[in-house]
Image (tube, rainbow, N blue to C red):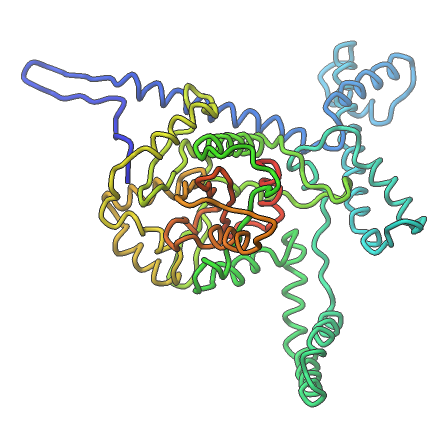
Amino acid sequence: MAEAHSAVAFSFSITHEGWDVNVDREVLHLVWASGIRSWKKRLARFKNNIKNGVFPAPLQSLWATAVLVISLHFAGIKLPFFDFILSILPENNMNYQVITCCIQSLLFWLFVIYVFRYTLKLLLMYKGWMYEERGRGRTISWQTKFWLVCVKMMSGASKPLLYSYQGSLPRLPLPSVDDTMERYLRSVRPLLDDTQYGRMEKLANEFKNGIAVKLQRYLFLKSWWSSNYVSDWWEEYVYLRGRSPLMVNSNFYGIDAILMHPTTNQAARAATIIHTALLYRRLIERQELEPILIQGLVPLCSWQYERVFNTTRVPGVETDKIVHYSDSKHIVVYHKGRYFKVPIYYKNRILLPSEIEIQMNHILQDTSTPAVGEEKLASLTAGERTAWANARTEFFFKGTNRTSLDAIEKSAFVVTLDDVPYEFDEKDTGKLDNYGRILLHGKGYDRWFDKSFTLCIGTNGRIGFNAEHSWADAAVMSHFWEYVV
């Protein structure tokens, strides 16, 4: 793998002539820029956490509330709890009266906000809107119309941030055992004959009257302990404990906007897509991305967005784990059997598309041969999970192999510059099928299947992606792809 040179900011040695100190100004500058970028991110998140905490009210409403309360007090209107708060303060003068009004404003403002948020949570529990008939000549029930108006009012006029609705989302409802058994029997009825179905009914009744009572109590306790009693088990037992290969069985792909073909220049298209993806990552880091709203009104949970970038799936003997890194300063590009570590920042800013294109061209024009074992290294991520875990422990524990593996896994994402075109022809559906096969599995060793996603760019400028499935639902990746394309 083509690796960056290692360097240290300070080095010193002791000789018979005294101290010899060396300072690497370039490394010091990189450390300084990294610190500045980290603190900018923290400040942006702190500011947005405050906005999310008081959503749907804008922060400006606090100052308006304070002005109103102070005006009412000095107009002679007696306010509740004013005397009690003032009695706690050291003195009773003009300054402390204003302070009392400010404290009272803050408490009243927070009370109203939480009333709005919990009212919105109750409103979002209503599911009748999903069953309304739509289309020409159809009418919506008055209950749903009233619900729509209330949700719109409770959502406020301020623009929501990525996590603004998280505190207002209702918990996942826990169905009763009877409902669960009824739905299960209904789902298997078309698959079984009368004899098999009768036996299944008997087993369902035994389960319902036996261990199901105890299991339901555990689920009830967990449903109050967490907002979603299914998500962590679903992630672990459906995805991470699976020992079969990720390729084809779990990973999914997405294709380009096939009716649009902005350029046939592979490097230019790669640079544009990489830059757009990095802008999207910055929106997530600053929590400035708007959440998905069904019909522009009903919010979906946004917590999975945090793992779109800087995320990898690490194999284990019995179960895998998802590792997310707080930041990454590079991407990894794969081309003709070689891996390249490409920086994405310069002087504390994201590289411009033109700057990224220069690096892509250098990679495309590089005629060096892959190192021993480098070309088909990613085939380990395509195979059986336990075998990959054992190989990782044996061969990637230390040294150059470990450094190279860290560079790939700690990257923001992986880019593959393929050496074949991605073709589409309305008259030849086989080309679209081949397009999908290339993105789904490629050659079996040119996609890093463990990364959250791999961007793929064909020689004719068409693009696609291959995404690992355990870290998020497809809707999150689709939202990202809509932004990129």
